[in-house]
Length: 180
Image (tube, helix red, strand yellow):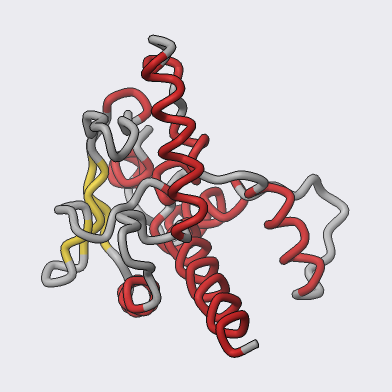
């Protein structure tokens, strides 16, 4: 029972981190789900997340930035804290911050299958997480969030852009931060 409670706690911490990165840094879901613990993607000293292309290996799939627009996004302290907490509960042998060991093994298996079939070019960044939209809608219901609009995990990213625009962020800066 204690192991099950620890797994649930780790899952919740990863979800909070995932949603924080999307809302407070404006990452796409595929960008957030591809963040790796031991990489140069996260610079805690400077408070930046770096999004850039990464070649695939035998252990993890390639990551391609949409429109090949590498960028660096500042992290507010809530994101820094959420990432630190997510790293603390990360499971041995899983390089991704927001994936469990089981999810990582599923991703690796699918990646190996695509490579062996010569289809690695068809790999999409969003293939890292299953049911992200379904889970997001469920979490919103549990949180009591009600809307008459179509609910999407993309709303987190849109919220980031809207908040920056409302704060008077110059359009070019906003465009660069969001990777447009």
